[in-house]
Length: 114
Image (cartoon, rainbow, N blue to C red; front, side):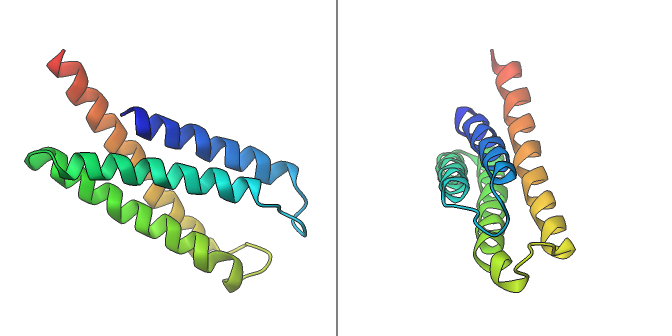
């Protein structure tokens, strides 16, 4: 759960840094924040895949979400230099939604167990 919260914080930091930089010179800091966030989600997914059935499914969802997010990160800038690809934006939103739902399920499971 902590790794998913860290992912959210790093994603927000990447968005803030992206918003302060000009589009012509985005810099590498936002990409570094996103990469660290993806590493956190991947670590959470690996930990969940090692658990019994409910955790394993959540881990699979997180692995798929990270694969989509990294794929968008890699292909996004080359598909449209201005970064205005609505389809990729929707896929990114769905993947981020999957991470949020997984975090909520983990939080509710933790609340029931304590």
